[in-house]
Length: 319
Image 1 (cartoon, rainbow, N blue to C red):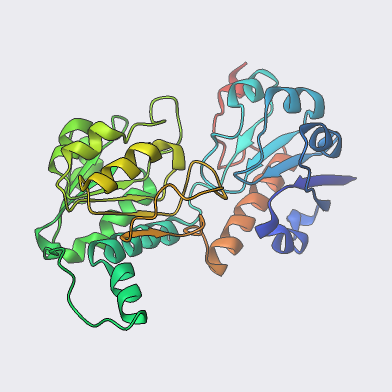
Image 2: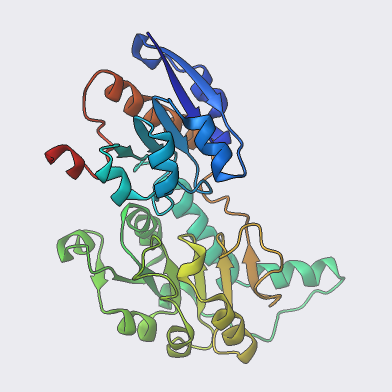
């Protein structure tokens, strides 16, 4: 018996095409559908739907296409209507270990490049200059780094920071103190995090509680040389307030791998000490291979009548 796996995730297409699928006869179809109606018709009858972050798996799509399984080719599932999937008994899986090292490294890279003001220095030298900037830079070991959310990526980020002797704080109401303490991280309330952090590193998923969480109040609580790093979700940071804080000198810079609109029609700010990357923090060749393997494992488990190990929400199984 043959099975169809329909995917909107271009990055894993080649790897999935060559997957073994546990001996099952599986055909992989790559779908690039801009309209929801086209997506629904392309997915209808599929054994599994694999989606990237930009594909919205809505209630109408789930009801019309009714795939057997939905797999997010990544960690975040804010683009999938989990409640409707549960109602329709469509299991949803993800790749929870995907790109942990890559995004943590991207966060550290953005932190270092903005704290050390590498972009303005680079532009100055390219323009013929050769002088120390007037903006003071403090030693990194004197800095407090605060993390907004303390999931697996933030935990890996904390591991990378351990060699810099920074003080580490985190805000995450869903993480037990023992998890943070194991990495010498103090869990604090969000307002305290903003007051005491020189660097605010955002790792939070998009939820109703986190949308716009890092706002003007947060920026005004930070020191005037403070920086904001965002590798989580763009809309967790209020970009208008961020631009205002930078222009007013309330903070000193930002490193942004994610934005509220991707790609943006206009950048949130042209401040000289802001470093942008195009939501590329996930990328390495190894990450693509591992993500595809996790997707294939979830599909094979489903075909074998087993529960995928990476199931996001298994309450649909309890009836």
